[in-house]
Amino acid sequence: MSFFGKNIKKIRGVKGLSQQAFAELFELKRGTLGAYEEGRSEPKIETIIKIANHFSIKIDELLTSELTVNQLLKFKGDLTTYAEDLKREQFAVIPCITDATANDYIAFYDKEGFVNELPTLQLPLNATKKFRAYTVSNLEMTSHDKGFYPKDIVVGEKVPSSIIKKLNNGTLVFVVVENKLIFRRLYITKDEVVLRADHKNIDDERFALSDIKELWRVRYVFCKRIPEFGDQVEDKLLLIEQQLQKMKEQLG
Image (cartoon, rainbow, N blue to C red):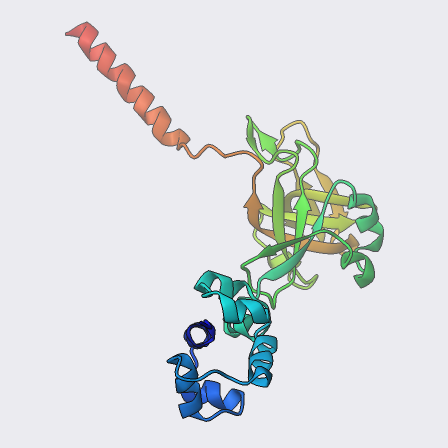
């Protein structure tokens, strides 16, 4: 007994094809296909070969065993083309500056060929905007054990030179300036740019606005460690409240 009829009926179900559509695909009459599926008739060898080739199924499997849905989904060919109809979300592809590429980036930041060779991140961001990722390499942006540590990654959005003066003071940025790549907070004084670290022992760096070759405003942050989410103000208030309660109990 051939399993051909059961198998082609299952194929139709997986593909979402009616008997009429399936029959037309292989130049058959709908009644003929119905007879195959019901086991009232056996197909010609040419028809078997055509169906097997179309769906990339081995002829002996098509004829001698009842195929499962999982098996059918694994076959190549037209059975899996339904996946191509799925709406594919376009993620932004973001070049990432790492410790290994930082020095070269300073020299070749404006060379598209070099930038295209950088490692990349793919994130669900607006793909029409221009982003760049930067891997933190020092402790300049730490303060009292908080802030950014080496291997953290910040993602910046490109800021045109004409817009830099409009950024708020304290904005997190990373910039290419002179022969440096710097991650700091931005402060503007007239035509001077001040790049300030969060670490109190790091001196400010000052440059003319015209010296800035490239500036990226930090929009997203990825920390290598899990950050602390505690509210310092609430913690202090709770501590004061506990101390006051103890004083009341002692006086009482």
